[in-house]
Amino acid sequence: MSSRKQQMKQYVDEMLVCHQPCERHRRAYWNLIREVRAKSEILSVGFDPAIRKPEHLRVYIRALGYIARYRTKWVRQPEAWRPEKFQAEPTSHRLALHSLMKHLFERYPVPKFVAFAWTRPHAKRWVHELYVHMAAGRGVRQFKGKPGIALTPTAAKFFLKAPDHLAPVEAMRWAQIRGFGGSKPLAAELVRNTILSEPTRDERFWETVIRFLIREKPSYIPQASALVEFVNGQKFLPAEKVWGRGGGPLPLQPNFSMKGRTLCSLNRHMCNWRQELLLKRPSLAKRNFHWDAIEVAPMVHQDGDVKWLLFELLNDRALMLEGAAMDHCVADYVEQCSQRKSSIWSLRIHAKGCPKRMVTIEVDPARKTIVQASAKSNDDPSPAAKEILQRWADREGLAMNLEE
Image 1 (cartoon, one colour):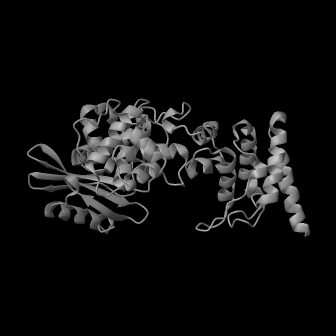
Image 2: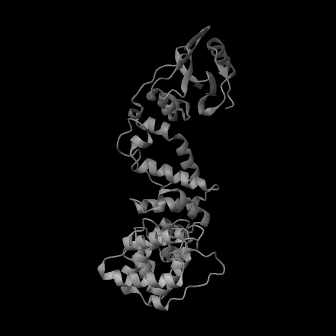
Image 3: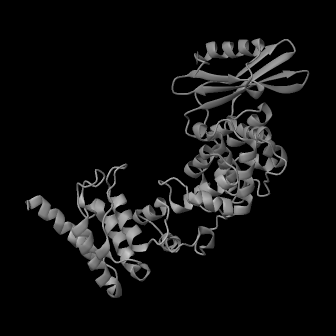
């Protein structure tokens, strides 16, 4: 044996000792290790392209320790194990370990992903219990230790067909969505990209969200995860995190409900929620911090009886009120403005004593460039407003690049 192979074997031996179970399981463990080494490459480097270093074997050694701890649930002994020959799939440590587990535990077939979960770095004990439970022929709905994701009889059937790459708890959510009538793409999106990959603090509410998404059928599947993120932020997260400073520790809309909503109305609320909440709770616009003005002067232009005012907005309250009045997202620029990466200006007109907001302008302070100019609801400014804006830009030496 070469020096390198000897070193790798020694390292693996040390890991085997390090992860051996307590005394009462130790004999079964070492007997299992002996059979695994004699009949497979599970404890070898190079057998699987993913296993390039001895330390990569740690998850398999840990899994073998768990297997030994459940020796009383074995229905066959390791000595009778004959490793399967994998024709259709590339040989891997994971498949080889699955072959061993099938031999030791399974009176009835168990989905691969439940067995594969034993090699996940932070697999919880209930995952091991679930595998043993199903290997004895009992259904997932009868398993008492599962997370709080309710599965209907139909969902339990889908659980058996969940993709192999999912963790068991993700497979439960995937099966729940499919059981409600959701498509595979929708189930995959919600499990992969939202908080629904784990049990939630209010499962009954999230069931209404899932059913809403299934009923409304978003044409663009990633939109579903954006809706889930929005709803979670409004109903469950502290307002301080969602709204920003001054929001407070409680959620913005703790009584948020899906009742009576359509996909169109929810999308509209997503676009306008800051303005809508400001109308209900003006205190949210309370000023919390201020930033210094950039080195560009404001402007007052008198044109007969009409006065034009152009000035910088210098605190978060001003941005929020501007966004609410102009029906756009300028309130989201608080962080950029406070760091002086962006400067927001408001162009207003006074005619017959009535002030009116006309245009919201963004200036890039570093480049001294006007990069955005939006009227209400992100419409284009009027010709008169554009003329005032150009006059100001010329006076202050600002470039105009409104296509960025």
